[in-house]
Length: 307
Figure 1: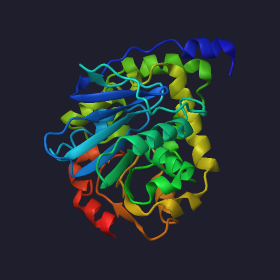
Figure 2: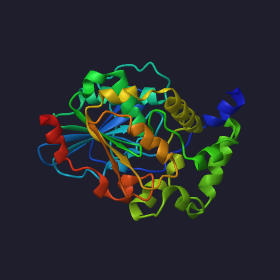
Figure 3: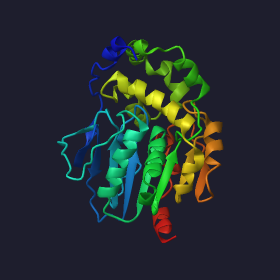
Figure 4: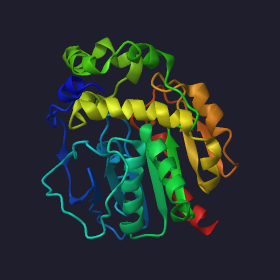
């Protein structure tokens, strides 16, 4: 990448979205992990891994039970979407050798979090979109850690998957130097100009979370690196990683204009039979935001733990 492009791309992007958060936030490398306070005794633990240009608030309303211990990742070089909490440096943090802004790097954040933070034995890890790839890469890096963990891969980036043709067509003519310009253009356009196409039917929560997408990362370089790494990871990662996934669900939307739905299904179908494939009626890539009804109930966790 040209030095002049890198200079343009590393100009900071100010944080534009945060929510009140009650809990603790730990810095892990260039990312973070937040542990939300819960009012009852924790019966199960959910770890949420957000997607490209999203933030951890994606999961907060889907898992708001008083006995749910909710642990939320902030991927590398993304803004931590909380206010009212000062991040701390945990004693258990280990340096990460991978390049920041990659699926491999964020998988290390996930593995350190899973190893050190859950206080229950009933653990679900729920990843949306790029977050699905982060989970699979984390399992590939450390399979033993996941023997009794349930995974939910929602509209996931998968081995041998593809971006939707519409997205590929948009990205092809974009050189690195054009990114800051393109993002300014997107941010100044009314969301209705592209929202319906990519995001499907809107609701208040979706509008709230998706209107600030291009402010999620700390710089434009992370956006470029995320995209290039997603495409590269899908192309070179083999579906054999699925053999390490013991329990879980692929959640597939009815319509997806971000990822190629057929390629996603074809990849999911190569997985051993322990993983369920649920073809939801969700009208967009953002299944959880379209309706919480498609998120599997947490009672499946106890069953998995006993299985």
